[in-house]
Length: 236
Image 1: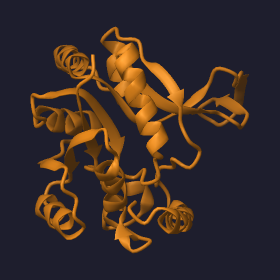
Image 2: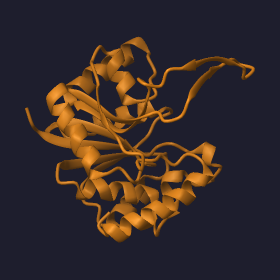
Image 3: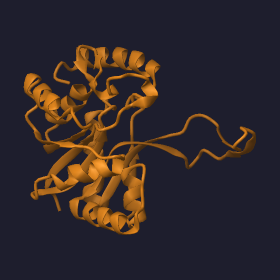
């Protein structure tokens, strides 16, 4: 069961942990706003038919201007985000065209997701119904108490760090959002939303370069990685 693939770009966060007055997705890195680097990947990916972007209130026209300036043609709509990631993604989901069969959600602050990862998530959704990309934890993980005393060391063999894109069939997302609205459940990513609705989510290998900008030092590393990526593939 193949069909059109849409992607929701979650770009409505304020990025308080970065300590910047400008939301991190609009900061310029390697000559372009982070959001444009991210959008360019999906613009150039042949399996993506449509993009909807959820942005902070007041940034809607700016994003539309940026899309025109940088020739991002697949953006179907720019919507105002909500108070939480889940609410923002739901607003974007409601704005999608009805023709889409598969829906992906991707963090605007992950501008280095490889084409390979996007394609493999789509393939896994076609086969299993829902999928995310993730990477195995490489460090030793400690569970600690409120006063920062070690409670135990967690076995890391089955622990993975979730990345984006995450996605499923459109119908699975619709059911998951409906159940969350009924129950009042709040979830930090799309995989947990789908899990709570009773769906099984498949994991495909992510990439250690698929980093998310969270702290100021991330911008420095991201800038160097983006420059190298642009040198290799100027379309991105």
